[in-house]
Structures are given as structure tokens and as C-alpha cells.
Amino acid sequence: MANHITDLGVSLDEADEKSLQSRGFKKVNVDLNKGARGNYIYIWYRRQSGRAPVTKIQFTFNNEMARGLDRAGYTKIDKNLNAGAKGDYKYLWYYRGSGEFNTPIVDVDVTTVAESEARMLRNGWERLTCDLNRGAKGNWIHVWVKREHQTYICDVTATDSYGSDEQKLRDGYIRMDEDTNRGANGNYVFIWYRQTTDPQRALTDLQVSTNGSERQVLAQQNYQPVNVDLNEGTDGSAVYLWHKKGESNNPMKAITLLLNSEAIEEYEKAGFNLIRRNLNTGNKGWTEYLCYYQ
Image (cartoon, rainbow, N blue to C red; front, side, top):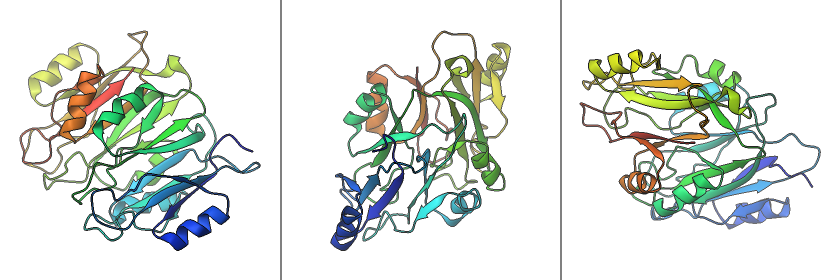
């Protein structure tokens, strides 16, 4: 039996569950609609010898997000993860890749409360950014993956349109599937990252600037900017992501985006590197903070 996960599935009802179980899938026994009064929805996975491993999982909540995934060869599970609830239509996509930026996934889990998240991150799990109850009033639901080897963040970038999505996906980037302009009526802006198993290639620090003086200080400290305004199209401040590499013995293992106020408190209490500069500074959008783990 293969150690890595080779197939994923989603069930929306009892018939789906029986079908997946008959084909050797195992259920992650956490309802993706918890608290939202929709269908009981579950993720399933399978490990089969001789099949290529799943190396990437992404989520979409609009049609534009899907185009690049489709063109880059991702597989869509065509079952709405918010079925029966009032939230956004969301779909799971996965990819079987190879090479430096594709480390096999060996396990999948789901959290429904903020208190669980810090423990997961410390135990080597990677948090997928999209809240699967996005737009609904249920629990904050996040999927987590564990990889075959420890990975490190070696690149970060951002996009304020969808035109380069296919190329970024083909280049091995993972999109953080939440809009940094959420609720601000601007462009859809996404942060992307790429992973390596080589700690020598890892980033060692991240920062965020929300005004000109902060940008000047970070430039003087030899941080490198990501030249996309994370507030593009809003009436808020110009917000930029900055990164640094090689000036620390603590390679960056994980990066995530936090919108849930309870999670923000839990991550800060746990001692993670929470960057307390709101990505929606100056507008009425959601308060969003970046956090990373070394």
C-alpha cells in the first residue's frame, strides 16, 4: 500500500459515501458544513500503490479562480462544498505533480475550531487558507495536509488579476485561496507561495508595509518587495508584502492568512510570527493578518 495519498473524493449524501467506501476511500470524519445547516459533507482519500501522489490541493469560490487550475491540469471534484447552505459555491481541486516544488501529501485532516489550529501547525501540518464555510454562518472550516517530507517556503508572490494563474500553477506555486481584499470591493488579490525540501533555500522573514515610511524602513533593511498592492482597487492604503532570505538560521516552514479573530488570538498566544499589520488597512474590508512559522 502506498504511503502517500493518490486520490481524493467528496460526499454530499449517503449514496456518495457508500460509493466511495466501496472503492477503498477513507472518510475524514468532519462535516465541512458544520454549523451552516447544509448537507453533511465529507472529504475522502485513498492510497493506491502504483499511482502518482497528490501533491497540491486548491479550492475555488468563483469561476475565474477555476480557469487557471483547469488549464494547468488540476482535477476538479464537481461537488459544491457548501451544498444545502447559503455560502459561496466552493470546489476542491487536486494535482499530481513531480519535481522540487511537488512534495507528496500523506495525510489530510479538517479543523472546525481555532483552538486546534496552533497544535496542527506545530505538528507539521500545512493549513489551506480557504474557509470552507466562506459566506455561510457556520464554523470556520479549514483543510490541513501533511507532506512526506518537511517543506520550507522558498518564494512568495501575489496577483491582482487571473491572467498569470496558469503559469504560476505550472511553476509550482500554491495559491492562498482567500482574497486579501475580502469585503473591500477591490480587485481579487491573492498571495502565492512555493515550497522546497531544502532549508538552505528558504525564506527567513516576512513583513508587511501599510504606508510609505514602513516601505522605506523595510527597503533599508534589505527586504525584497512583492510589487503587487494587496489593496489594489480599493480606497485603502497601499499594502505590500516583503521578504528576506538567508539572514537567519530559522527557515520558514509555513505561511498562512488569518481572518478569524479567535484564530488570530490563538496563533499569537502560541508564539507564531503574527504580522500585526492589517492587509485591509484604510478600508472597510475584513481584518486580515499574515502569520508564519519557523
